[in-house]
Figure (tube, rainbow, N blue to C red):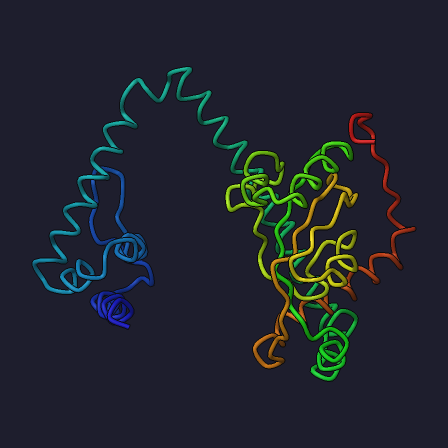
Amino acid sequence: MRILTALVAAAGLFAACKPQDPVIAKVGSLAIRQSEFQRKLSEVSEGYQNYVITPDGRRQFLDILIREKMILAAARASDVRKSSQYRDQLARLRSEEAQRLKEGKDYLLTQLWLDDLRRKGIVSATEAEARDYFRKHPTEVELRNILVATPGEAEAIAKKARAGANFAVLAKEHSLDGSTAESGGKMAPAIYGEVIPDLQDIVFRMRVGEIGGPIKSKFGYHVIKKDGEHRIDFNQSKDRIMRVIERQKLDAYLQSVQDKYPVEVVDDQFK
């Protein structure tokens, strides 16, 4: 709240000025406008923002921006601008910027398309659906996972684990799952629908303490230890359940339109 107050107060310093984005200062041909002042101010600490709303603080902060513009003006006038190093790095920057813009456009389009599907009820979930899902799947499991490349390696690890070897140590030594190996294979607690399909039905049938595997998935071969299972609270888990339902509906929708968008894996190493 104090940050917002400081920014509003700083904006108020220029409220009566015209045009809408007035020039505050000039350094040669370069201008410092109100919008730049406020943007730069938003990037500093809260305490300094509160200081900048004072006359001394305001001028001190402007002096900082003036110094930055002076450095820029001198750099623009130098021979560096004509150098191959500058041109090469500028070309790379423009390429990266174009890629970021493309990714941003794709992300925006995707999110608005998903929002449209929700408004149409195609992928949205209702509370009634969530309650029905909860009645069928009221528990959450705690799992440890070891992922390896071959069934033989998975079988050997499972044998060691069932013989009493420390599962966490085995995970650190052997698992290819970089997101869980360092934590001894420990996965985030999961409700039904949050576990990858190849493992899901198996792990919910396993007993607590049981070691399962090898289990094949598209990622490789898994050895799983079930650390726990408990009933969840509906109100605390409703949002998670609704996300699972929405994802399932989206998967079903994509399945229904996949004939329009044939998939071809071109690179042989991914076939």
